[in-house]
Length: 218
Ligand code: DC
Image 1: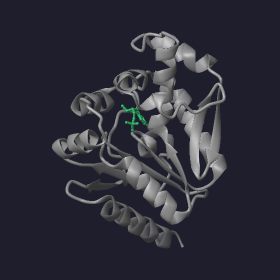
Image 2: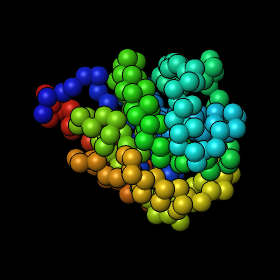
Image 3: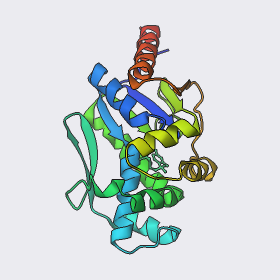
Image 4: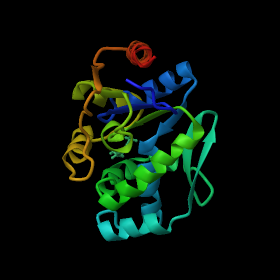
């Protein structure tokens, strides 16, 4: 195995499977830059809602991607997608945005746009990128792929503990059954079912596997 640099650690998985927490822990431990690609899809969903664009109208949503004014910035080892010069940090986490996001994420032209932007993140250095299609579609060439999952009951409890009421089963179904880059386990990915595990335990498994694969490259 030959090491490709910058290194990309791809962490995919179901909603509330601990991707964000673990991706941040792994990025911190290794000194890599963290990229939350779900936030990028959420930003588009929020922007469509703001502009009264129907998120079920594929053409209208694709047209937004052509027009909106965006840029990438890296602050404190985290990449953000800015729209009109700002990162709508709070707005993208509302229940309304969460309900809209998997609709915009199913649009093939949106996924093309996102893939290009997400690949541009490599300009910031070694990455830990979390999402649904990073290992299968955005960086299929990486040797560092992980897939996180946990029991639905446990994932629902985690969301509730965050104060978020959400139909995770419906979102998982839309994410796994869409035609364009559906959520699935990438070839060569290490699958971790972290039901009953702490994030310290999950991130330790990921970090150890990264070190093992790095050693194989040397
Ligand atoms: O991880 P999250 O809950 O913030 O993701 C929001 C939505 O975006 C989720 O329903 C699936 C979609 N998404 C995607 O399709 N592909 C990605 N790489 C990241 C997120």
